[in-house]
Length: 93
Image (cartoon, rainbow, N blue to C red; front, side, top):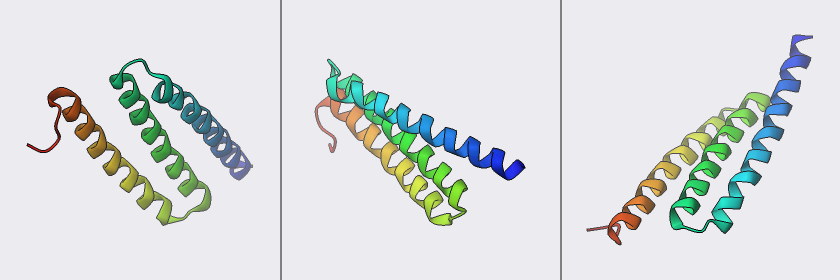
């Protein structure tokens, strides 16, 4: 019985994360300012990272956890680079 509850909770979490990713693309595509678009992208990569973690829990495969780690690291670096570009107009000084 606990396995059924766990699989149901993981399925619900996957559905909610996909819906959150859909809602995160709206400000990313239609944001009136660049800051809104960056915030939408930041939310999108966070949701993608969490979705990979939930896939890893569902399949018991370590590869998904490594993919989530890579998504998190690249997302952080890209957010910092985009914020620096918006502040100063250049990324590399």
